[in-house]
Length: 255
Ligand SMILES: O=C(O)CCC(=O)C(=O)O
Image (cartoon, rainbow, N blue to C red; front, side, top):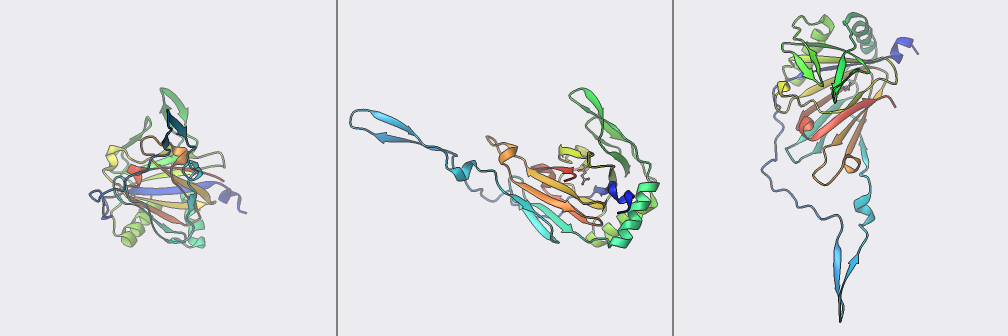
């Protein structure tokens, strides 16, 4: 294998106007059954409380949905509306993807930024660049506005705009240099991105796992929430739209 392909480079572009994914916010929501029931049993002389173990079904971790085929996937329809993924595993053919990978790897001004979490500053486990009309801030990192786009990114933006009919306004690129580099669980829900941003992720280099987990409803936890996994391949495109950033978190790790 070409040693450069061992590095995981991933280009993520951008944020557009809200999509026309239909919300079902006003539809009635099904009620949720309680997780366990305590049954009272009448006794002739006293009332006895009999505890029943929760049914095994309700305690089980929900299975993970794995997406590998091209298509449109509505991964949830509540609480805020439809959360939609669109996946194109071969958006860019392998030869062109090799060429684009090399150009992005060599031409972009990659930097390792510092995040701040709970008052402690640490180096991000990846390199990034940012292009956009506005500055972008998250976790104590600010990428200043940068309107002089790299030509390869500009070309890719044009292709996304024409295929998807959307006007992307910014791009955050991530370079994962080895299997230890990653992005931790988060949502791209910063106010500067506007409500229900559409995010297009283009990937180049080795495949890596992109995971989503549903934000739990009250009384539940992430361990028992729904999970979706997509092994993002060289040249693939993933679109996240509708309520994905509102109702889900994502992370990426090398398997
Ligand atoms: O590289 C990826 O696919 C995930 C990156 C990401 O979620 C982010 O930078 O916000």
